[in-house]
Length: 473
Ligand code: NAD
Image 1 (spheres, rainbow, N blue to C red):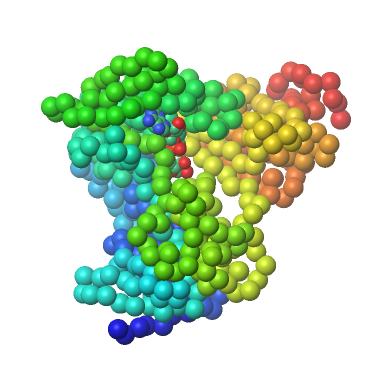
Image 2 (image 1 turned 90 degrees about the horizontal axis):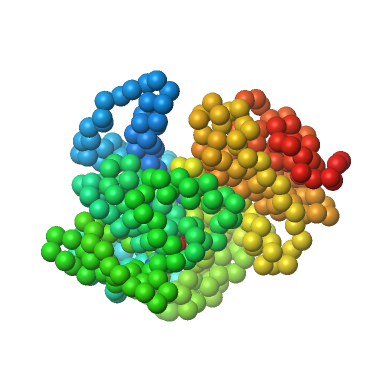
């Protein structure tokens, strides 16, 4: 058995893995990056964030065109060519993939295609079409990501039951579509299909869409979702699926009652699982918890002092930008520098319309953790920019420490919230106070002013909203 030697081996080429590989190479390490997809970029770029945002952005035009009729601009009924739509979306992915390959090459990162399995504490076997290769490493970073959860009662071997991966290949526009799960994926991809013309039913087991997200932010979204979807069923679980001729039958339960429905396609979006099985982790001395997440310390170090793990395979939230940050922390730790992933303010965005975005503590989390807080919010009804977009269905909210007046959390629901959350995240990360946000000159007319207005509202002095608080500066 011939062994190749490498300094740093990175297993997994998604946004966590390739960021780690590129950063390590930039910092002078010799790097081998192993991935079994034909293109770098992982699920995020190939079968997740990027194609889904391409579809969301494109189908948003359909909705926008429809809305323009109220403003005197009329279009004929759009005609869909799904082949062209898929091709365009694929081109976005291909372009990004080529970019990553060339970035790897120019950094001399050796990319090895194949499936990697640990054989020992410092040895990885890579299965390739041509045979096996063995890599002996000084250090390794595991970044194997996650996959959609598809529990047995829903895994019925019927191609009409889709996970996000299949749903991103829009082969047809089903007449009736069931979306199981009112979380990130269900709402984003449900939106795409509803805009294309499907009658979409969303079934969510808990009492509200996007469980865990601030209710004030979810409220405007909930209204929009009720108008775009055929039906939103809350506190309802999908118990199992079965094939019924050309359709899929779904069994629903709510409290003590049950019923069922027939659908042409079913998208199962009930969460994701870490990709940690069949990696030989035991042979590598790398431990996992009861849910299959790799156990790591603040730097991402596993039970094997030579091996780190980052991203979806080791902890929530399963977000690409969190994985990329952990990648840099792990590489710094490998280089012997001080770094920690313990105290990140990870922004999160649900790319619905309106979008929902937040960072830091939510009101509910502050309450749960017995942290004293106050809140201030600004309704977009009074924003000139929101009015000119015809999109006043938004809210900007701040969670504030009543003593220091520092921001504890920020949240935005509204058109463009995905881009707006960066300001709030920066303010949080820089330890800004609500006064800092109020004093900062925000350009007019922009939606960013809603941060300033929310901050002024904290003091009862928002220009475009009547004061509710006596607490003047
Ligand atoms: P999720 O955890 O966001 O939502 C799953 C939902 O399914 C939950 O609300 C849950 O209550 C519900 N559910 C579970 N079992 C059910 C059942 N039997 N019947 C009805 N409802 C049920 O999971 P997801 O939407 O699959 O997304 C997975 C992860 O992927 C997310 O947590 C996120 O980290 C990541 N993601 C992020 C983005 C983004 O950043 N915009 C987009 C897509 C996915």
